[in-house]
Length: 320
Image 1 (cartoon, rainbow, N blue to C red):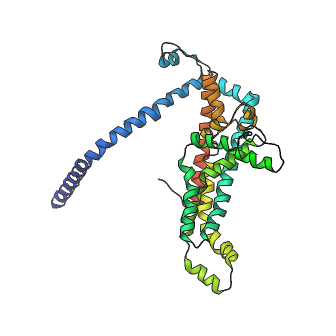
Image 2: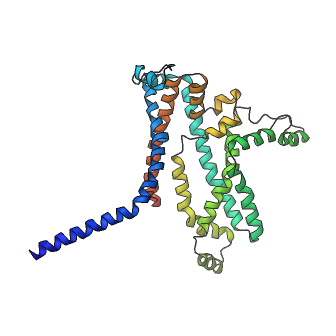
Image 3: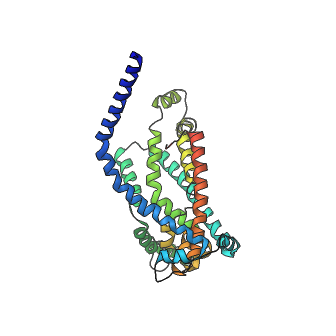
C-alpha cells in the first residue's frame, strides 16, 4: 500500500513538473507559431503546384484552383515527353558538367590559396587579402553580373583592351559557347573563394602546433610538413565539403547563369533551372516546366540523402 502511494506521489510530481515546464515555455511556443504559419503558407503551400506536372494544365481567368480542379489528368505523359526531347540530354549534361566543375574548383583553389595564405607571417597583409577576397561573396549576382559583363565586354572591357595590346582579336567571353561554361566556373570561384578559404583556414587552426615543431626538429621542410601534417589534418573537412557538394549537383547556379547568358550560349549554358524558367514563364508551358522542375527536385533529394549518409559514415557529420 505504501509503495502504491509512493508511485502515485511520484507520478503526480512528474506531471506537475511537466505542466510547470510547459507553462514556462508557453511564450516560446506562441512565438514559434508565426514562423511555422509562414513556412506552411510560403514553403508547403506552393507544393500544391506539383500537381500541374500530371495535368495538361491550361490557365483559366477564373483562377489557379479552378484550372487545377478542372484540368485534364495525363499521368506521367509529360515526363515521357521530356525524356524524349532532344534538348533534354544536353540540358542535363550542362547541369552536371557545370555543377561538377564548380565543386572541384571550389575545393582545389581555396585549398591552395588557404595553404599559401597560412604561410604569410604579416598579419595585416593576411587580413587584408582575406577581406578583399571575401567581399564578392556579399554581392548578389545581379550586381556582379553587371560588373563582369563590363569587364569582359568585347568592345570596352579592360580584359579585351589588354588582349588587344598584345595583338590578339577581342573575345566575347560570355557569348562564345565553348568558353561560357568555364567562365561560369571561373566567376563563381571568384565570388566564393574567400568564404571557402576561411573554412579551410579555420580547419588549419585545429592542427596541433607541436606536430610542426617535432617535424622541424626531424629536418622536415615546409613542403614535407604540408604533405604529411597539414593535408592529413584537414582531410576530413575537405572530404566533408566534397560530399556535401554532391547534394547540390543539380544546382548549377540559376542566378549566375540567368544574369550572364544569352541565346548564343544556350547549347552549353542552359541548365535545368534556366530551361524551366524559359519554358514555364516565357513560353507558357507550365506542365512541362513543372515536370522538369519536379524531376530535378527528386534527383536532388536522392543525391542529398546519399551525400548526407556518406558524410555521416565517413566524416561523422550529423545535423539531427
